[in-house]
Length: 183
Length: 136
Image (cartoon, rainbow over all chains, first blue to last red; front, top):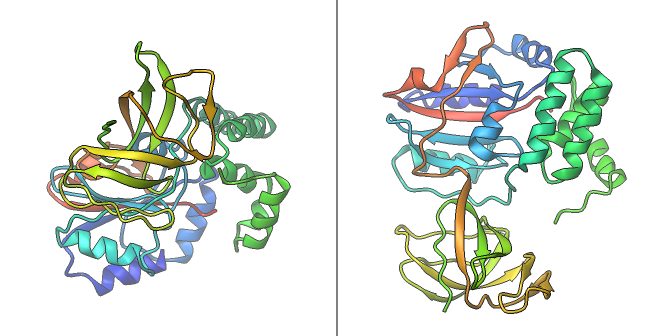
């Protein structure tokens, strides 16, 4: 978020509104992160993954540029980091009106897995953590390339590995333990 | 010669001669490595996992290589996996699964950090950068 804040301050000439959406079932964590960082843009909480369903993504971070008529002009699925190329250059080019296509290897969501994931969200809302995890594991097994499902399980089972710092070493090991192989 | 038009992120069902499904096809660039047989207006640069498109959209004839499970359009009992196989005669029924340029951006209504509900439609008339992330 601080990277976006600096980008927007640096490029205040850009005539665009920025909206960040956090995909966290345990949203208190996002609020805590935001309290530590002052930002000048809306940060929305999408705990039911409504955008994942509507736009078709199975991982974050991603970004879309939407014009004044509500039409998507640029979409990058995955690996969107405003501090780095190619994402940064792609977005800047798209903002000038250029037709930009971002390559992506993200797979779209599996409808059955999506149903189970939603049921899991509802279970967690009711405080049924074990039931939620069980539903999410079934969803994950139906849609192994869906990072939203996989990471949601990790974040709920091991919150200490995500806050205050994300333990990426553990994640690599965990993928091995889960027998994950990219198709 | 088989022709399939690709636009955005689509999936298609290949239909055999009797109209029955003979395979599912995910037409997301970077999953397939294309070798182009004949094109009109499209140019594909083939780098590992990445493709670029030229401006206009048109029909593209192609031979597909790569990770595709597809039953031979001639013999439905034969299943090919991870190999090279030309598509013979098949028609495709397509479905858009991930949104891209030219698609209307779906609206949403979500709470912000202050608890206020914010919708994409609140910003109609302005250009919007929409960024999705998570704390994990």
